[in-house]
Image (cartoon, rainbow over all chains, first blue to last red; front, side):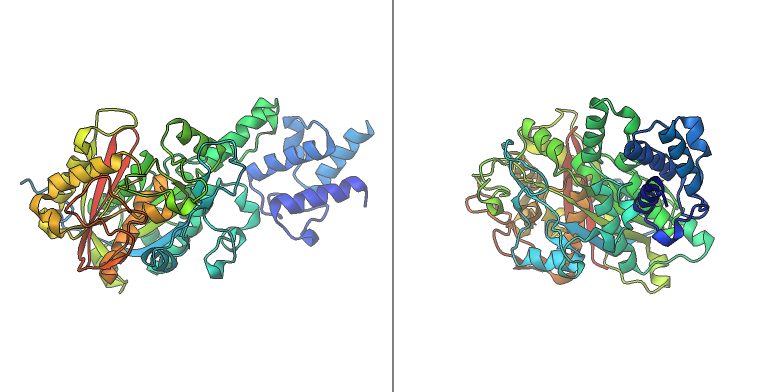
Length: 79
Length: 427
């Protein structure tokens, strides 16, 4: 797993208080990991902070799973 | 005398559960045994560096293992939820948990849930959270502000969290009347039950203002003790000639109020009945009480009227008594109201042991007063070495006293000139 994926996973575990084993690529923050809408706002902020990227609101709305987050950040970092 | 009081209606209101978090620790029984033993909860401020402030003493809720009366937050609130709440909400939730569990009330039908409400207030609310958020904005990081900032700071969110935790779907309300909050919450919630809005109400106050803004703000208002930074246990000294301001405390006091027949029908333990409640406004000054504390006088008088009592019926007063110049004004008002009956009265200020818990004070002190009824013990006023003036009222200096106590009056007064008194009686 990439360094970015590792870090994303760690942030998710920390912010949502979930077991690491549940944070699979396909896991949905809201449906599988118990987040509410405010949790997801905070998660996106944490990603922005940790990776020094800007995630605009319309992009943030499309980040609903762990994989969505990893993909978006990897794309930003590659650009 | 007009009969408009709590006891004149059909529905009586009793206390069936209690919870306290205070500088004396977690738990009602631990608080009471330490209070009666003459212990105090003071120390130098440890939660932040207060060395550049004139007041450096406070009553902080002790951290530590739950079984020894300390606060281990993760025993009460899941770690991921803690950051969504300011400390005053943490403390309120812990005390509410004790109170609800103590009451044994677990509504199982939707109807029962809808008949159970919450009314928990605070004087100030999420001061530290607001401070930290302000810094974030000041640093040009407004977009990094936590989405939990607002719900973490809002005063009525203790009520919100308690309702969510237990599924209480009745009236969800909150009081904000500075240092009178706790008594107003109990009195107003009792009236909601009396008027039929609910059968059970979880009521009280929570506060966590031992933070840089809280201490510095009250310092600027010249309200805090500054002469006892090296002897924290002596700083809170109600009615003593050397008192020089209050000592900030933090914590929460929560009671479960219940309609009497409802409590009886489920075999609940009944601690006391709320038989009187009185309010008044000073219309005088933003922080100073009027001469003779006439606002306090009227609040107490209104409480007695609502209870249909005369001063001779009351054996113990838990004074507002913050350890400021206003202590003697409250004493004036109590003496005037009680007249000749003042000779038989016991009155103490438990703020001498806990400090001033602001919005939580009235609720914590109502619980102490209920325990005074239960055990026939008047808790002491610590550090009352040399009263600034004499009184026929026994202020229970230094040591708790066994006294026959079946009816108490508890006072709380707040900035803005708001006064509240509640009268409780053993059942």
